[in-house]
Length: 335
View (cartoon, one colour):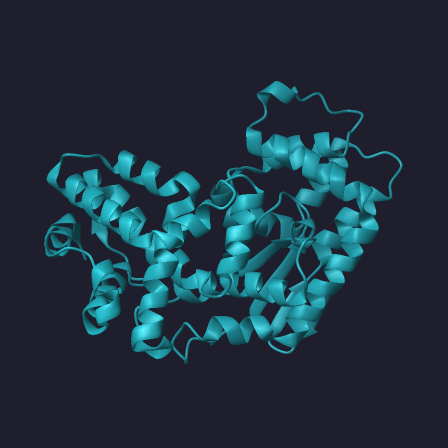
């Protein structure tokens, strides 16, 4: 069913059909296919499947069939990806904890009705960006959430969080949607694709993380993407990691390092999230949220604005990028 919460549309139809399947004595592959053919699941696969590592409907059917222990399922477990195997266990756990799912769904609805997530996200975007309704889709699939045209939430993913934490997570995903309406694309030379990805991460994830950095740190630590305590350690030693990133990008532009090496460095313990958050926070604290909002969707201008913030604030000057980095960066792309 659809519930209207002011300008926010809450679609619980996929979640509701999932619960219906949980109450069936026997579930067949055809039932799974029918579930995943619904508009809400189809939209999730189309908008976020590739980002989550399961881009094709058949991949979802395969692991859902295992998760529901369908009698007519013949898929061999060893043929499935780690993400699909994670999904199987996630679905089995969800089916055994329906009361818990119902409770967290209520918290999500309360959070949406409070509109707190809109207030949080709106701090970091231009004031006239809210031109369309916001859709939130509740499903059960893998422990994740996404923001691409719609906010798509796995309900059991939010079990550990209270209403205010849920609002901050929703704000992060909403910010991604609002950012997409402002995105400026740059054409990076082939060998510099990793630099384009890096500054995209810094701007898009960094600003979105202002909405919920503590929750981001908890999520990535809980799911093993960052070692316990590592995110705070990176933040405490941020000058070192910014310099390492500065030198790595410069070396890629000089041909001494590869884009792959840069991405590997920043992906370990999700350094790109921590560094991006620090860059965004520096702009916000030095120049204000309104100025920060003006560079949303423009990764290159975000880097330039950060540099200006470091120059303006003597306490932050030590965290700035080198002149060599900024000069070489201009040679890596065509607008």
